[in-house]
Amino acid sequence: MKFFIDTANLDEIREANDLGILDGVTTNPTLISREGVKGKDAIFQHYRKICEIVDGPVSAEVISTDFEGMIREARELAKIHENIVVKIPIIKDGVKAIRALSQEGIRTNCTLVFSPGQAILAAKAGATFVSPFIGRLDDIASDGIDLVRKIVEIYNYYGFPTEVLAASIRSTQHIIQAAEAGADIVTAPLKAILGLLRHPLTDIGLQKFLEDYKKTQE
Ligand code: E4P
Image (cartoon, rainbow, N blue to C red; front, side, top):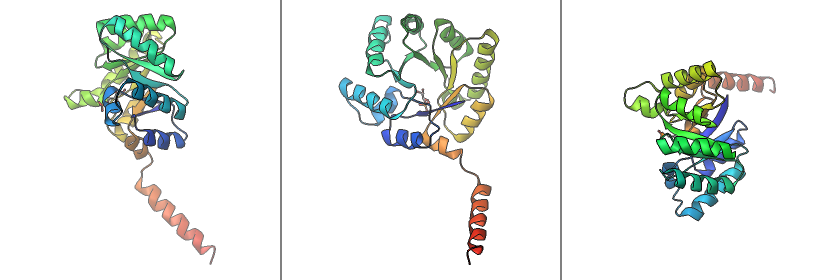
């Protein structure tokens, strides 16, 4: 199972990377705008900085919605750094773009996936990653984890090589549920990743061990 961090914040990316368990990064236009990065050059520079921190796939999203625009943007993004994976939305022109980019050898992350049907199209088109959005489905009283489970089952059944990247993770519990559902990758905010460390019995146990050790030094 691989761990990606879902942020464009350089400090958080460094902190997760320093843990030694980080395999990649996902960003989107919302996360980039949250960092106050403005203009194409600054955004590309920001992606470059992320790629220099993390030795793994870094998703950068296109903002075009037509085939030609997506291909143009994808080629520019892919030139920034070899770690860049181009994020393409699951719309009609997006499917065509994923197919063309996969034939060019440009890796893609098919984003905004909310149904098994969309995930099948992404895999058929040759997406490197597919991103089912768990939290946003939960937000509308649907079952995000169930979608991950269904996509994993379908991909396994047909041997699709597209990796299932559970996205829109809102909590530590989501990470565990996505792992149980068989997701290849989970992309999560730093807070949810660090939450995996927490258990009160660990804190109590460690405190007791340290106190007892002190007795051996008196
Ligand atoms: C990552 O690829 C997605 O863009 C991200 O996880 C969306 O998360 P959100 O639903 O919390 O905005």
